[in-house]
Length: 124
Image (cartoon, rainbow, N blue to C red):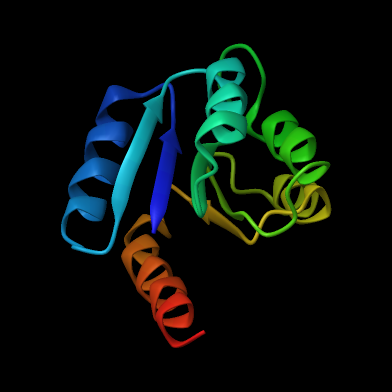
């Protein structure tokens, strides 16, 4: 499974890289700190999964999601945020996010979701 991660926090990027490196079926194909670069990479690298912060320089994670959904409906997309309000959750779901995770409360769910998606790919 090819994965792109995007967050303007070095600490979050490092944590995501560590999580994803635990799985031998995950190939991290890009790590980005702003939304404009992330959108360009999604178009060029065609990953299976994007894990993207909701609030980044350039384009926001929601703007990236809305743009890429016009072109790719199959890409799995996780929105991460410290702003885990019902309002932001609704915006993310409406934009096409598969999951909306709080960096504070839900971060540790990411490996479980990745494993679930890999299992579906392998059995398809």
